[in-house]
Image 1 (cartoon, helix red, strand yellow):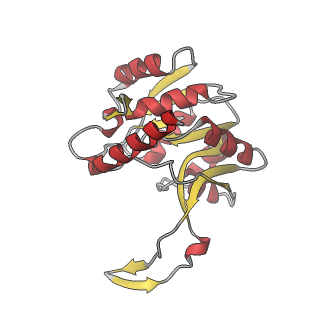
Image 2 (spheres, one colour):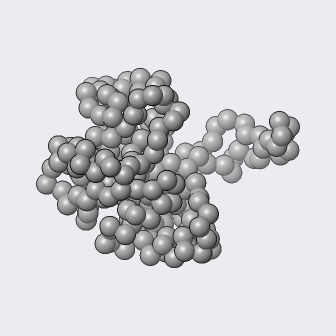
Amino acid sequence: MIVAAGSSTRFGAADKLMADLHGRPVLAWSLATFAAADGLGRLVVVCAPGREGEFAGLCAKWSPGSDVRVVAGGARRRDSVDAGLRACRERYVAIHDGARPMVTPALIRRVVEAAAAGAGAIAATPVTDTIKQVDSGRITAHPDRHRLWAAQTPQVVLRQAWLDAAAMSDNDETDDAAMLSRLGLECAVVDAGTENLKVTRPIDIDVAARILAEREQE
């Protein structure tokens, strides 16, 4: 599943998923990568309501021949993931943020393999900055960064477990591992490396384009 229903408020007036990245829209990179991934059952793309036709056209161009369904998401991330999961049919589902165009088939495979032994697995990277917990403008804690990882996507989860966890409360969660934790389920972690960046601000487009150019040369 590729979740692409966000509002892109930090990117500015433009729609970051449709911004040009090295010759194609940002979202197109994830569509093509998942279409090329081993063992794909169905590709579900979750978009903002009213944009289903537009996204269906993108899917036809960048993931031709795949079993693709485009569904409308909701106001919150959990609402969009819920809609997407109900259009899936496999036991495990890989949930990916459409704003992470640098994902590779190899990373998808590694996360899928790590999830196979349990409830799920996520791509993440170790935190390198020194982190402070701050409340009301003052530092209240100094977490040990050697135990901290920055969560990314894809995140592979047991489909029914996610739905069961979501039914426990209407509160949102920041990611899918946090949702599974409601049931006491723990996810494995796969080191995604340094290139699986998220496009949040316009400068991220420049960084991603440079990485893609280097990949082509290699």
